[in-house]
Image 1 (tube, helix red, strand yellow):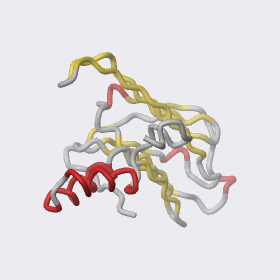
Image 2 (image 1 turned 135 degrees about the horizontal axis):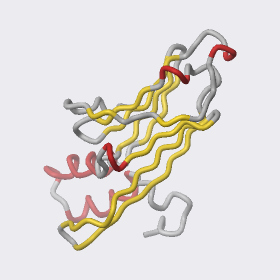
Image 3 (image 1 turned 180 degrees about the vertical axis):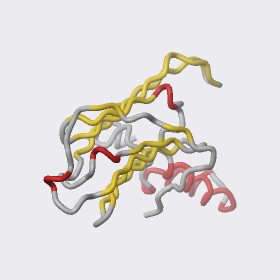
Length: 155
């Protein structure tokens, strides 16, 4: 409850947020599983090494048709939106926007984006030797669907 008005509201839970609840009401047998599930949702990770740039984003509530991925200048913008749907508790609609700066040496002509069967969006592109070789242009990146579950990043 203390995080209701802080700058991290809506970005997921920290382990310290769950421990008072889990230690008093949940048996030790289920505690670890619940903790892992709660902390793994909403994952967003950016990896940039010498050869490759990649973004991993948990979008399990969205289909490829609900997602738009665009490169504009030095940024990639990921937008997800689905219309109102019925769930176990009533009706819900979801929407998000994420914007990431691309490194200057990413080859923008070789960018790809895929959505795994378990809802992990992977956006990636190789890096080139010099920043002058990476042509910049505004364009949409199609989201392809993978049949196998994504390899969720482990940090």
